Image 1 (cartoon, one colour):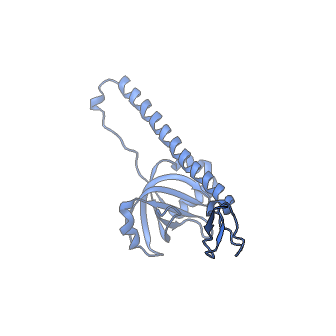
Image 2 (cartoon, one colour):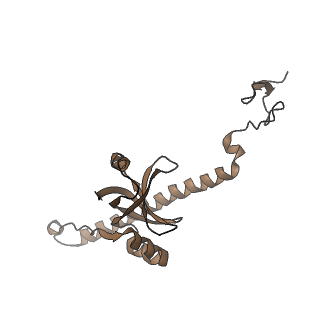
Image 3 (tube, rainbow, N blue to C red):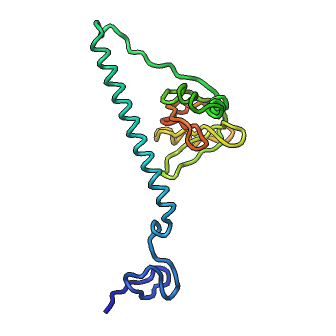
Length: 191
């Protein structure tokens, strides 16, 4: 005798290996199998995010190693003060227009650097992984500055309203789709 299971849609007994219910004609395969195109896109997206982060970490480790070797070659390292790169201050519209005009030039100028962006809040949302972000108006029609928030900034973001003027500080990661993305953002000023 063939083993059976209950159809999740109509609760009738159906063969264990059935992909469609013979009674209600419902597709009983799991979501990922039914939507294989979306699943494939998600897999590639997640791989890109994971591998992209890995490349950044490798680059940072190599840079730190080269800095350490330079310091060991210099005499009197104890007397040297650590210098931090200045924060680049720019408006959201100016930043977006530079990326729109020449993405390579803008990446060379801003990518990986800490910047302070000021502008008008366009949206306060969560991405598909439930991470909070704020978009600041960049272009009049299409693109924005997308500021991915630290968990510590959730309460401050919840108090924001569309149209508020804000300054955000974070590390610029570049242009992703139509938005210039900044990570580890911290809200500075609201007017």
